[in-house]
Length: 342
Image 1 (cartoon, one colour):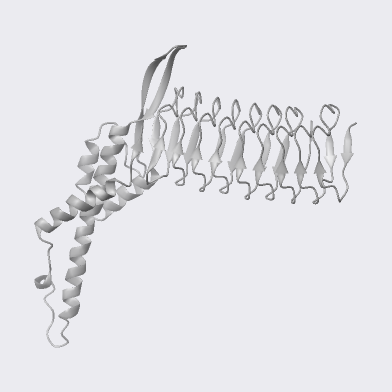
Image 2 (cartoon, helix red, strand yellow):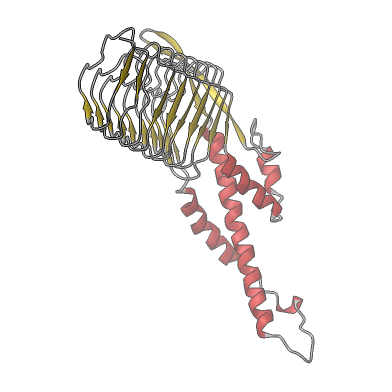
């Protein structure tokens, strides 16, 4: 059997319906009335239409000739191991609407080169991209909250990953053995957590970039607080000029019962110093803006159409003790909002 045509009115494809049909090359005209594809249903190619809501466990497992798949937005969940072992699968389109991509979904899809995870997905589950050895381009959209343990383990072609601002947790060993990974860009500017071994075995990882912190730093300098530059230069190995804040990674050899492995971490101490400087100078800038607001208020009250206003004479400075109090209490409150756990 090489080809199957399904007619309108079909609601479900049951378990193992086309399993082991090794000569099957295409299934055409998947009707919009179809709402469920059960476990082990197929062995090869298929086009999925809107209206489908459920794909069962291992529905396409070991479909070694399947090259492309588009998951319609009506599908809310992709079950575990759905495309496991689809070694020729190259193109996957995941539409907005998908809420969960379960464990091992794309395990062993060794031809998969790129994937975009829609914003409707909350979590990257464990082992989802295990041994996707040719995966080079991963786009994570805002909305994703957690990258769980072993999510991208063994993605040996991945060189760059951008973590959106919505991510709160990067789990232990989530990028284990991504040996070509060189750069991690983190957009989160609030409280988030990175597992101790999130980048274990990432022996090529050199740097972490923080675009939002970089923008805040540039704003401070443009506002005239240029003495922060000397303090930033005093933090060894941190690069920050040119619109990019780069903090180097720390490589540590750890002995395990089965041998030695390299754990790569973000340099927590350097990040803490950078955040502390930025928070401090932002509060300091706020007191300057407060003084300007008071000054403007006095000028507005003293406007006289007959005699010109001596603007300098109306300048108001916040007393030193008041500034110290603002810095003493506001600065620690800001620091609590940016915590990296290791």
